[in-house]
Image (cartoon, rainbow, N blue to C red; front, top):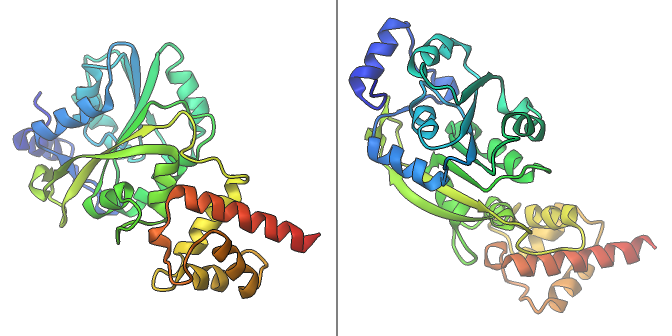
Length: 294
């Protein structure tokens, strides 16, 4: 069964009286070249496992199963049980878990599913409305031994994930992503590659997970608190954004001294700071806040 064929997708929809759920952001991939690029980007092989988020009708699931040792797919839509039973029949290396990915104990799940796999990748065609919560949860998850994460996202989100300092697309999400991984855009995917077609371009992004964070702040929680406060008001300068956040219990004069000590201009904005500069800034804020409390 050629699962990227529009005829096959139409056949399955009619047979199982199934229509893509807009509320779940369901758009089924129908371009075999894009499918091949996703599988290649996952670097799956006969010794590796792949956790797939949102298998849909099993297009990517089946392609991954031909390459990987094992595929475990998490699907929230119970209506797809009969569809997947047909499209994935004959594969003995696929497990389907019908649940909400945001509510699962992922380290436990991966330990159960991939104990005999040398490496594990994650692959997902993420619904646009829930991209950030899922990605944030994956990146912040402790004890998740993952080689890479390959995701299909809205193009503008993909650009943000990969954006560097000085870019208008650089954001708190960029910093979080690059703290934990090295992102790269694999390809841009136009709407016509899906059934039904979305209204905007998509992009395949690979996040190669770092063994250690890109920087090592004194306090990781404070580091990300500083990043969020800095980007909280993008039209404001870094100094004003930090002051207006009220997140650190420090007055404007104290924060101004910290910014000056970092050799940063009072007019600099958050999107101009590197991860190393954010780390140094958060460390300085931590020292000043501790002194004030003492």
